[in-house]
Image 1 (cartoon, each protein chain N blue to C red):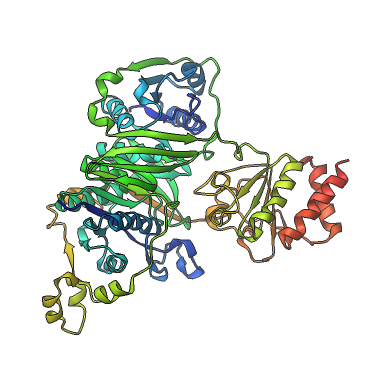
Image 2 (image 1 turned 180 degrees about the vertical axis):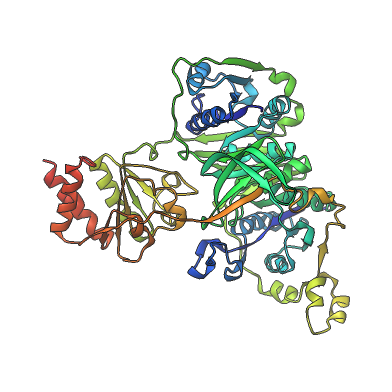
Length: 290
Length: 340
């Protein structure tokens, strides 16, 4: 049996470099103004999977993502870097999912891909920073979890040894397989796209994407079936409606507010000896320092 | 209404982590608001002075699982113990530290109980909710308030239907406050041998290297904090020099930590520590929302920045427009001169 690694990844709005136009006047987020990217720590996760495959070419790396049609972009990104195939799970019924509903849907897709050995994801996604989907998916699959992985030290068909990065140190743990691993940003960054794979997969599409394209590629996809990215709906996963999307999400957003800081009338201090000495004296006289 | 539970983390020294004591302090206030009791769950081995330490925070019941296999922390055994307690006691609210441990166990527990969990809350309040769609009124819900979308918005999350209402909170966000030195609760010992199954030990620890936290930024009255604008690891020495003579601690923004100028433990802001010192000197920090959220409660803020329009200046009491490498030596010089 091939060693099967399933990488869970998410396409996220790039919240790290939020410009002025990213917030609408009413204080809500203008998602359209933010570029959609491969969640950074999920790329670290992909690298861990690909490096297992480097050492064991028989291993198979499958990228699994949940999201709208355009999330197929990150599947292509993974194919360009060495993943074997990808699955997009996409359905209107998934809209509004919190981490519990998301992990439910992901766990059904992972089960459909059984038998698998490893489920690897980033520790957290930058749009929510919750770090919950990895452990929750592991729980739903009934497999152990190893969070904050910095390095996979060794792996064979039965067990894995992982170095974990914790707040105040490191820990090396051994786990039986299958297991779920979440990867920390201190793990190696992902390799770049490989030119040969970019050429091979640049026309890889989901059926939904093909329907929106004007040119007819039927022949191309008949000859090269690997270019067709599989797409699963809620029905394909035999998901229960009550467990999906808003209705399957116990957390509800009651209110969203813009971040408001109390502005102060900042006193400007010149960068001169006299003014800085004056400031230091003032701080000392008021016993803030000294 | 059922009670409020706090999962108390056991430290390397076999005491209870600060973050858990902070949560007990907050939990007691919520418990008083709701007129319910505060209960602690402690999972470990040979925890020192457990009762003496926890009761003064107003803890009514300590659920304690003591077994050598429960220390140090591993996910599955701790999850089994917490689930055993929660399934019996059905907490109204359950709080966890947003630490390496809390962020590992809380989602696993929430998934098993199919209840809602909100990560990294910066505020917890009790309030009501009216659901228009179903015309249902919910009384006394936990408002779980947290930054979202990279810190650009603040969201109030509620769990109307599921229990417990679960949340994680970072260290330093809540204040550690004793309730009463004389407060007495009771200890309920859990039978770990009965709760734990062989499957819980699928993951074993081979090696651990833990460092004692040397850096205590949270409790420092003066913080000299540096951002990407400090420019280099070498320039950070100026911050250490000033901190040294002022008896201060050195903090940093995420950008400075990511650039490798200083250790991660010094990071202040939403994904680091929250601080409220008497004086905060922000050196070369532009002041992303995420950073400001972790220090805007400082009593006095001085910003040193080459950029007049840096957002941090808007919340600073004093702004010095200039290069950190140029300004800090002057501050050091004039402090020394005038402190004699």
